[in-house]
Image 1 (cartoon, one colour):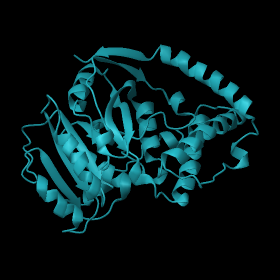
Image 2 (cartoon, helix red, strand yellow):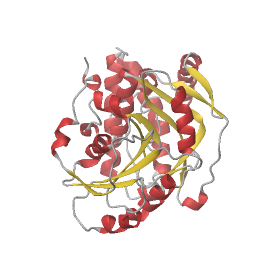
Image 3 (cartoon, helix red, strand yellow):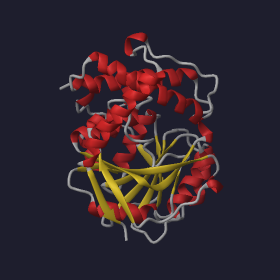
Image 4 (cartoon, rainbow, N blue to C red):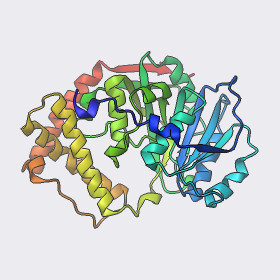
Length: 342
């Protein structure tokens, strides 16, 4: 099997790294329907908004909140901040005894979850007050074999900008690995429902693909199991203001690694090299302009290596995009499910 679709165990070694239960006593006889998992590292200034949004859920109580701190220093700013939540019954706070990296901390979250159904939330993002109610309705109707379900997020700089609503229905689209040819078919994996058992079964999140660990996580889940998205409902907010200081080294690595993974996927399906280069050229134009705007990096300049791209005019790119989108539209016709949320 090709490298990208190997089940490599990134979980077992983490069992030897202790995570100290700072507060929150788990009652094993009462397994919640969902565990909201919040991996964190030195972000107490945004973590409060995240936890508060998880606490303030409308008309749903069958869940707990697990914060996993990847900073091993005891008594740090985050631990002091977290004391305000220590008397809230369904909030749990763990501290890893060593820094296991971003991918490792996501995997630690899976290991520490009290439920088989987990909602991963970044420590600077927020949940809609209707999120758990809607996730529960979707969960009841997800087909067997599901591993991932992802609704939309609304981008924000300040929580006051957000205005969420309830929804009467949603349309699920089942993804295929074809959707991942040009890059990740799923937005940032925050406010995302994951099947814990299947995440562990496929070996967890792979640190070697950083900073595209989310791309590979959802790609592998789609290959081995079933992945669904909804593009018609918003269940969370994705904060953008905190990402303005990303280094050009990180962004360069993002584009290189994204292209590398995309190549691995297309090679697996024996896509001709000239077609791979066309897809990279077309997709890069959109992704590059989006990233510069999204991360507020107007002076950032990057070009993919010449052997990964073709010399295509803007008109040629537009024509190719239309053809490519028509193929997607045809595939999507057979992969849609409409479900009621009332």
